[in-house]
Image (tube, rainbow, N blue to C red; front, side, top):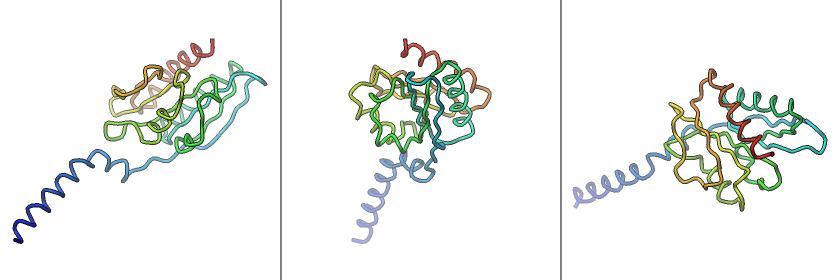
Length: 171
């Protein structure tokens, strides 16, 4: 009887490890959010919301995009990804979400945010991954996704790509 229990316990543990294996990194190494900030461009001008996790690359990218927005007279607000829980994308002209691929998937907070929105056409997702080639497969067709590796040498190119997407939405 003990061998049979051990067998089934081993099978159960193996199944649980298999099913949760991809989620374990998300639990063990949660990411922190960037600091909140706001920069004013033109009074009454368009507002771009950026939501991001915190890393050296993401801070540099948020700073680069924010500077480009303000230089064009566009207002910008930066929040953390955790704060997307209380955000409706319809309150902003454009929403840029900067998030990491963790265990081959979008962060749960980002998934919940995207599913909750009635219209995703003003949302731009920047997904960082190891080699920069990963994009989520289950995105709404209206969401534009940009992939990038988290390397500081690519910040300017990624920021230009994001600004191109922002400008196309604001016209």
